[in-house]
Length: 193
Image (cartoon, rainbow, N blue to C red):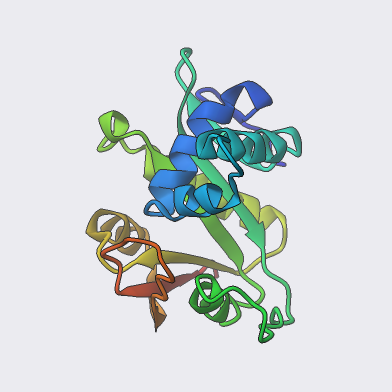
């Protein structure tokens, strides 16, 4: 990981509550739908989400913006290799279009989660985190960036386009019981050269 300067820092397990919120914002509510499906008996779906995010934080996978009172924005991403992920017959229908798009972004650094709390939007945090993502990608040897957004998330798409991303492909959303207004997932990409 490249050095981080305040207000940026690596997330820790204590950030799990905020991280679950942020990943759910970024995922247009899909994460909560998945956590609800995983919950058994009276288990709280948010507890599942917080546990998953605490694990990602422990693994050093999440960068957050923290002005001193906790995480208000976050970034999670990873490099995509040169081989597409196999999409077999048992691959969950809900995630099939997302994986199909990710398979078109080979050898790129993928922005998996970029989100901030609504009250912190419009302060340049998303732009700052995207700049960091590009620095991480370059340090890791990647020459391209990629991200998937929901077609109706105009604000996110506007941010990415301002930062030089353009549409590469789209795939119809397979809601598979998930209540959403998303009709299509859109793959955006950017060259770092």
